[in-house]
Image (cartoon, rainbow, N blue to C red; front, top):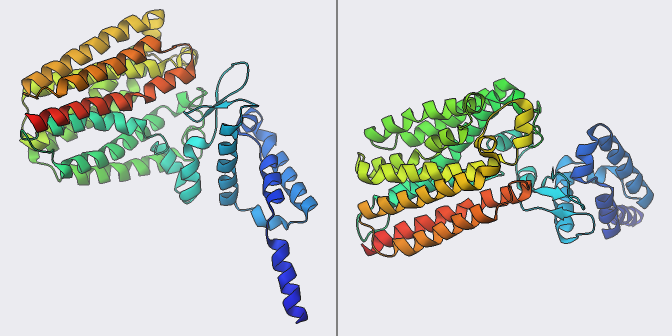
Length: 404
């Protein structure tokens, strides 16, 4: 009986109370303060955490696991998003302090990676940008447009092809990010937004990044081999663009145009996968529309880094256009919509395509007219909203093909 009572008391003492959890959360430093003084905050937090647990009488080993701290970090971020007393947590995972100033990244965007993936895998997931799916959407939409446009009149698109190209978009976008980070590690370390990337920060070595790239390309090859021979050759030829793109920012003020050529290759490949060939009257305007669309959204995106780009000596359309940015991207936006209309007309899409195209044009016009190119948060929000532009165009193509 004495032993039973002793064990019961021990189990009761080991059970954390709400006060303990809240005390631990209050001891956990915010990501902004941690970034401001990374050399000392970790030690201060550890001392504070141990002191808090010791004061409350809870055993120290209870919350020493890193996984538990990551979960508590995510929980605290969710509380921070509710409270506005010390700042605003932005949708892109950044925290804006009161009174303006530069935004500082938090852990919210990669919270699920830290919570659910093993620690050894987490840097590779971040290297592939799995915590930022917008890039995958922007790569996948031109593929989906083309596959759906190539469907037979009155029929749904090939679901197997949509799944293959969706998976391929995840892999190829991740491979592109890996190549970019390997080639740009000397630049990324000097840019506020990119200096914490796995290769630039030293979490992964270049050899580890290169090995991961090999795995990504091998998996991508497995998808490519499921397509017809024409598509295999066309898909393999895109690797030249993928590998050379990161160098363009060193050579020209138009790297966004080169990205457009790379990111919209799926507009050609999707049609070829269905038709075993290319109909230039349809796919060429579709491809050009994607290139112009990329010039719009990636110029907006580049305005986030223009100060750092000037310091490190890299080029972009944001620097090339400067205060004339809205005039330039308005022209590219108009060209994008015009090319989409020509492509849809040549593909004999039915009437429902055009109201959706008008809605997409309105969304793109809203981005261009309202974006504040001097505000990093607004530039990021407008950039991320392009997934809805892609969805509107896809919906128009789908309904236009089903009714035709």
